[in-house]
Image 1 (cartoon, helix red, strand yellow):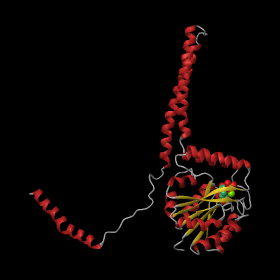
Image 2 (tube, protein in one colour):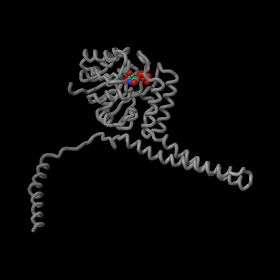
Image 3 (tube, rainbow, N blue to C red):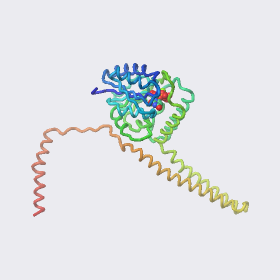
Image 4 (tube, helix red, strand yellow):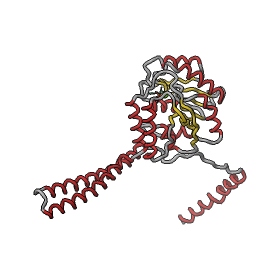
Length: 341
Ligand code: UDP
Ligand code: MG
């Protein structure tokens, strides 16, 4: 299928209960938005239920479906990455397969992109069907991340977003291992527009994000987008140096006054002084380590949005070529002769 206008990428992990409905609603939305020129990339992230069998069947019945099976479970973010590497469309929609992100928003996203956006991301105006615990932890997490992250990462967003080809290519060209995709897309920049929506409850099946995976995900996000935790040691070091100085003054004063057991002042001074020094040295390590972390991510140094160049008009091009052939090259030869004479 040449000239695919839109690719949909949906990661699926044990989603047998929702796949049929997802395919039906997503296909309708795609037809509505771009007609036939679309593909739906369904990535089976090492499911242990009938997910792959169902994807294979959908791919057989519907030429728009591209089934991708990973060898084992790699997790949501890597399943998405795999899907992106396969997607060929001029625009790519990332969406969860569990119908928490309504496929029906696609036409709205497309028209915002027609207006010049590079990325249109869904922003949850409300979330139903989530536990109070998930809502609270998510809220704390996004606020904290916003504070420490070097690039602003919009709150209350998932990976539900429409991206243009330029952004997708840059994203696929980012080789980092720990991938926090919504942050990476923010990092790329360009014109990113929010589309508020009501996040529905999971259509069927259960969440694939138990607490353990949520913590791993949050850790990836923090460490990929902030070196603030590493810098903590510097501040702690400064603080403990000040503290050591105060203790030192106090201990010396007590020693002068003769209020001390022999050895007390010297031990206290030595301990507080050296722990302050240790903290500062650790902070210095942290600074270097932070730079190493940035380097090993090997992100592109810059992201070019577009290049414009007006082709030279014909008469000028011809004239320039002529003058090179006649005067330009000739004078070089002349000079060569002169030099050897
Ligand atoms: N998912 C995946 N691999 C995983 C976990 C989840 O591909 O290891 C998919 C899952 O099938 C769904 C999406 O990622 O399409 C989001 O997962 P889920 O709905 O369980 O997360 P929640 O919405 O509860 O945060
Ligand atoms: Mg979900």
